[in-house]
Length: 455
Image (cartoon, rainbow, N blue to C red):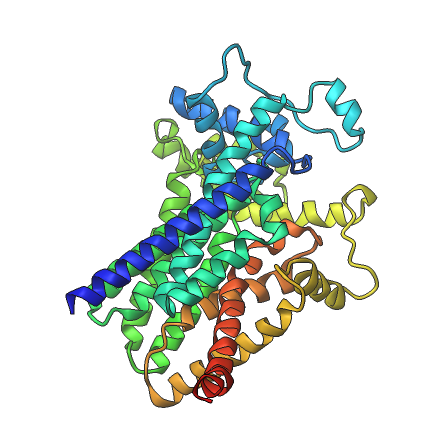
């Protein structure tokens, strides 16, 4: 028994080293060839700004607000992705290089922005892009591991190769954006969900629920949508585990509660913009402000503009609301962008058709990939249906539900037809496509190749 296990371990090691080397070669080759993205200066500038506050231990709320950071500031974004860029740039500074703090002006041309100093110098831009490349390499390994642990080594390898050669993935992996750190933590959570599904002891189920929630909290500390996607995905696999009889209702409730607690705790712990200043709390003043506030609201005298000056204690506690308010701000921002030609959504006459044309054609790794995606969906769906019918566990449920949740999420809520918003679904789809390819080859091999060989 030992020899086959060692052989499998060696084969797995060779495959994943090959994936890493292949991905490194392709991505680092393209790092200086990829077109400039107007958001790159914003992430670099805000990366420096929020990293400096962190390293200085300066947690004054007004500084973390940073209105000059615009859509790259705290009002719209948590800080983990910015820290990843900023800490790396500060840890490995170029000789004589000054910190960059300018933002792209979308009302001006590229040349005008460059003349005004709104474009980072090429060496700085490439170093910031290197951070994204590292996360991209880890995503390639993770998609391979998810395919391996949920199916086999072949599907893991095929999925990773499909991702590595995807043109959209290459572009987004070589720009200084935060989409790849976000997807890295989401994929870590997907891998943790496979471990969670296999647990049978209540204690281990809760521990893995906490781990999964923490990873979703990290993803949400890069982009706020992580908690929505992660919550829907976890709910789906909890429901699946309960249906096949492997999870009691009370344990299901405990798991979701544990996930929610760990995710929200991480989100608030890693984002000083959501913090309440404890040293400013005055118990008596809080009580008086609550009483006065209630009376003003009841009498219709409350004025939002005076809230900060009249209710400093309540304003301090209102920082806790900044996280849920981010969703409302993003909704408003995207609605405004929909009306501006410079942020063209490019949906055309039929959003549903345009969405699927973009996802199935523009985001494919090879021509007619969508045929294997449809085949993979049918195969996964039938296996999950059989799993539910027989009450047996199917590990492929996790990556399939991960794909479905990401797909449904962007289908329903994506307002702007921008390639980077497809990325989580694009990455997730590669395992489904790999499953379709693998089963097709397996069928052809058994049906025709073996017969020809015998003949």
